[in-house]
Length: 516
Image 1 (tube, rainbow, N blue to C red):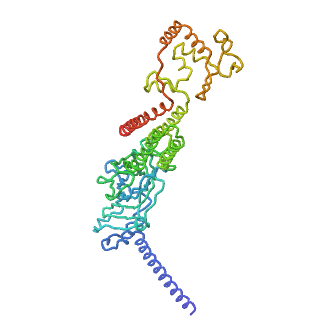
Image 2: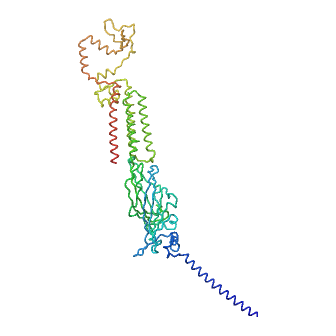
Image 3: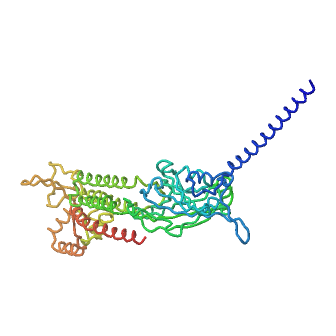
């Protein structure tokens, strides 16, 4: 009996074990089928799937690796080809150039397009485009493009709203991004404020060199500007674009530690400065300030306070006006066109001050000035030539008579002594005599030589005739002008010379500006 029970128990246990093994095998096969379906979902029903479901299946790890760029091969040589990324930029805001920081700000729409055949779904009988925002772009491979001359850049608005991604049935991917960037722009201020600047925007590939990725401009309208965009200080002229290759090595580390040649795109905008502001706020006021400094030529030469105040106030006003125009510019080492104007106007204002100092010095002289002729040459020469040189212009007689000097204090005759002796002749022992006129309170002193000449005239008529002949032989006297007359004559000439010279300076300056 015990053997029968044992055999029956063994059969039941064996049957149970066999059923468990079969059930386990069936469950494993079912799980393997389910796992295979989860690892690589089918696209046979792509036409009926939602866009999110279709994107999830297209970008599944069994079909798509977002870290690997799209790969294409040459059909003939089977050579691996670089992916071509088409680029288009639409600029809708351009801020005025910051001359001090050498940069400008730009708001633009950057559009990148390329083909990724791994994302094509046209063969599954679906023809509509898939549109999405950032969540769609995060599932795709994207080229890493950056602004090579940027100071800072960022995406405008929120990340969800300002990144648009489009996927076509042929696998064409379009990424559109609204972004702002502050870009470096080297500026040349030699012609300021008549200058024009050339500012470039440079795009380069960051990760992939030319063997993996090429940047190209779109064939139609690669660069466009908002027709309503306006600039206050500049007028936008022509613009052009260019395609280049940038070499990176251990010296030029613009691409990190990667060496090689990298594709680059750039477009340049020509900005011409509007000069209306500077004509009304700088050039015309500076002309008026220079003209005001010439008012001192109509004031009398000895009017020192008003002429000094007028000259210094115009000089300080012009310096203040010039500094307000140049404070926004960087400190460069070369001479700008505006500085040439500043130097010229400063010269005329300073010249009016020097002219006042010159005529005021002449006005305060106490002796008259002898002139051969009354013209500019002899007047200026007489005012600048030292007095001893002018005294030698006359004849020897004139020089001898001027070289002598006499004084009423030397050998004064005493009131108790007689001037003439008994014979009626002048006592030669006395060199001077003092004459007092009863009607006029004037004390007159004369040299003894003159007394001798007058006595000789009274004693002998022949001697008087000889003296008259000597006088006729002396050279004629020059025209004499007082220092005040000369000062007023210089002021009158300055009223004409300074404006004429300033007009000549203006003609040369504006000719130089437009020729340069």
